[in-house]
Picture: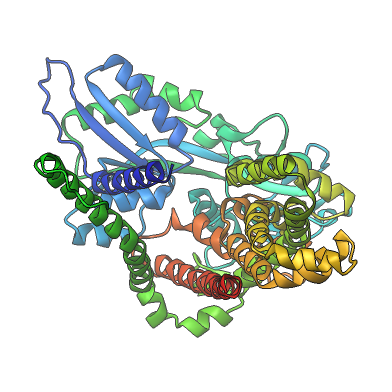
Length: 288
Length: 307
């Protein structure tokens, strides 16, 4: 009994050491003849907002190109960008643009980040279905999220405390909303609850009659009510034609212009077929 | 080892066996020291990564700062909201798990029959194996909506809910270590007390519990360590508001929740990144001290009964 315990312990230790040794590093790329079948592997890491979308692209691309291996990982835009800077991935998914600090870090590391906008995402403002408010202006939203308006009656609702829901600061959506709604040099109200996932915002909004939150268009469910912003309802169409105020780009970053199998992948993503996946996943295509 | 007198046995196998034994000893020795090496490496890693924050922002400035706006233009990195948040969650967790945990340990050790005790012990150990994300989900679906209605709260995502669930998570630690402490109390004491005419209950609360008190204290401290460091549950349930909460009925952010929630998106090597490491360092020091105190107390009790 004792002996087996020790053996198990030693095995576990050996395994964990081995695991540490194995992380990181991209597989080498096999070059591709234009005529021949595509082979090679691509590592993608980054935004949690985009992880389902990236996974769907990867599956569909691998379906038509069985010689290609695409590995997709979430973890956050910052994580993906850091991995790109460190040269451990081929593409970084990001739901925000790279910051200057990151670009200079990349250049210092000999990496030339190249940005490709692959989709757009509308941000829907959601409330509980029992809430009477149907329309808010961008200015009202800003005052609500800065904590200047704390009661629903001040924006046309009933007399009740507003429960502010936000994503946490690890989310690209958080930063986008801060810039567009809260104000670049202003702060979210301290009372705002920073939830770890979009699903958590949907769940709390569904159950709490006084909650307000924001989620990507792809995550809106029938359990919550979407509020129009400046009189425009959030939809793929209004996000694409720019009439809806809250839409942002989703990006793929690579080191230099993608070539070979990576270029084929980007071409596929921007093709009609790849953009159809965007629509299926509830995001907004960048090209028609 | 028994001396090898048989001439034929001396060749071949014993040498091999001795080599194997030697190798095994080496492996075990390295594994034993590994814990120390890893601990030192973690500390060094935290300090190095927190270096930029400590020199640019200042450790006292962070610990006493009241605003947490890490991503704004004029970023402010105050830990106080997270420290008070962690404190509230831990306090609620203790109120939940200490009475129940000690009572459970007393029952298992003093009152339950052997079969019942064995079953209970396995169940408690099994409880420790439930992944925290599962408990978090249960809290999210059962406690958060219902407590909001029952207590007429603004929202169910509060330190109270997070504390209750964290308390349930810390329960196995407290039960098993308290049970060990009670078990270690010599039977002579119990028999002496019973012989003097005390009932079983009087024996437990006048003799056994006081005798095991330092072990139980250590159990509670280890439970605190467990509660402070818990991440997933607080990230899911505490609400993560940046306020300095005046009561557990408000949404709070905690240190582990802040680190886990924000680490993914920061610029690596940047100031915010470094500040999160500084926060991790604070958390590490706090849990280290708590565990150390618990260990010292536990060791003292062990020595007491060894005599």
